[in-house]
Image 1 (cartoon, chains in turn cyan, green, blue, brown):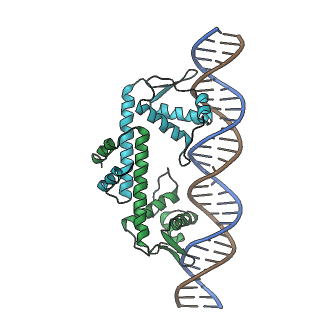
Image 2 (tube, each protein chain N blue to C red):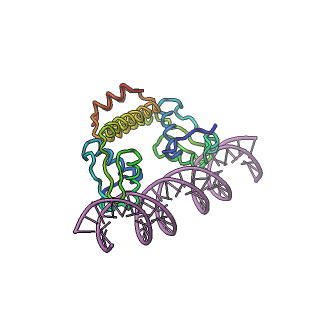
Image 3 (cartoon, rainbow over the protein chains, first blue to last red):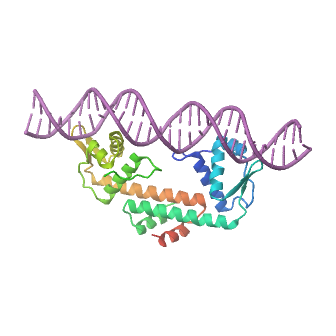
Length: 118
Length: 118
DNA sequence: TATGGTGTAATATGTCACTAGTACACTATG
DNA sequence: CATAGTGTACTAGTGACATATTACACCATA
């Protein structure tokens, strides 16, 4: 079940995004075990090291805890997930606003465009 | 006057973005001549080949016209600039909406965040 | 026509991010 | 202790990016 990845961004980064999305959306439960690196590697059609990097990033973000020989587990700290949600929301918003400014658009104008799209 | 570049994106790409921004904001006039590749290279502390690539991209976007032996000139077609403005606006909006969806945020929620920031 | 300014092309070099292959180290469990 | 499952470390290949250098082709102009 090889997943499809966009080519304009590293695979490991896309996987991190995907997992973060699942965490935020509640698609995975607190304390759940993630697939092993090999398992996930096969599932997504990537190399083990790529998955390892994903898990490393997640751990650096305090979203997971990895135990050698046992596996990688979602944090049990719900506050962390809630915080993540806010962080990502703000970061998304700020990046957007930065781009808007760089191109000389007005916030109101863009909000209007947003509402007439999707 | 070497410019500062972010490390998470190719230099040539950042230069293209910058020039596009200037075009949209009207910081440069229709038909204006851009600096020569060598000139611009020195100005921005970059190699000639990098600038060449920038000019090539701009021409591929029909934003400039390069005349061998004379230089590279901004298009005189105002419609092209106006179209560019729309293109970039829509692309920005769509990328934003895609991210929102991937993270399970609602459009209304994000608009609210936008208005309380910056 | 000579000169200097333009863009263009080709090649070599170095760096870095990404990914993969392989082997190693730890843990649980029979 | 043996085995199978886990994460981890090392090494190498690939490609994108940027640089440096050199040479070429075109144009304006003195």
